[in-house]
View (cartoon, rainbow, N blue to C red):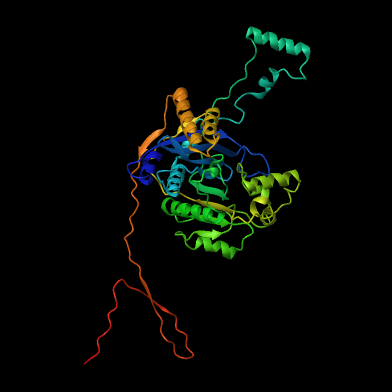
Length: 434
């Protein structure tokens, strides 16, 4: 199924929405985890998704997700990792959409996109031959003679043009594909919609509530979409007692959850070779800090987590967590990817139309919506995907709750707890025998 077909089931019945789903072209990138040596046996492909929803001309929800494909020919393994970068609302959810259900459906859909979609049309790291490009530039170091030659060739149109390296496709990769999910939870006033926290209608969850919100959505995903065998689900809250962390896991349906991280390392392993370098992630920022301090080659995983607790993001009294999931997806048939695939330039342009407005009032949302639609139409002759919701919330049966407390006189030396009697009928007294 497509994303729009799945979203229909969680959007309010009879109400019309527009879905804008942008996907960047896949491209070569550096390995997620630093390697001890460079190797041609390791390939890492990166793509970005940006999905936003609108209702009656108002954008009200957005989510930004990175997909990493890591192919390790040496160790005969392939991994697809979904990193949740940011998700946000702006207080303009007038139709009372259940954002948790929407987020769950979006993640499930992106998990099910076949890996082949990211292994076709891959943009190489150096899409333009660098040596020719450098020779055509006039800099402070360029001699007068060479500068005049470049200017003459530009005028004549005989200047050597840089050779563009064509996108390529990978067809051979180890199977089966392991799927991973990773995210960092921290409550912030806004993530994607600037100044939206100044909208009084926006509800910002605290750190504790946000963690529970994400755990509920992810727990449902791993129960519905992952094979139980070999499934690992980890929760780590730096500076928190493990027994306290376990309290978050007790209410979850899956019994695969446990305290810890999903980076497959031992306490004495070097953190730099185990911790992934995600964009805008506090763990990655700390690793970069260690490199600057020349401590990266001595920092163990155990010490990494200890020192991470002292970082500003983790010591402000707000619940901050790291969640990691890995396993194998249950097979799915008939999947359809309805995203608009874009170059890096177009992707960034459309994303900036949404994240560059002021959302303290509805005006920013209206402008973002118009700009996105105009750009899609003028550049690609495309539009957002319109859908009509079919979700009907379950109605809870009405209950009348009258509480009658019957206090009994306890016998000496024996404590009796008060009995709570819930009854909607009057209690008749038993008639005495005449």
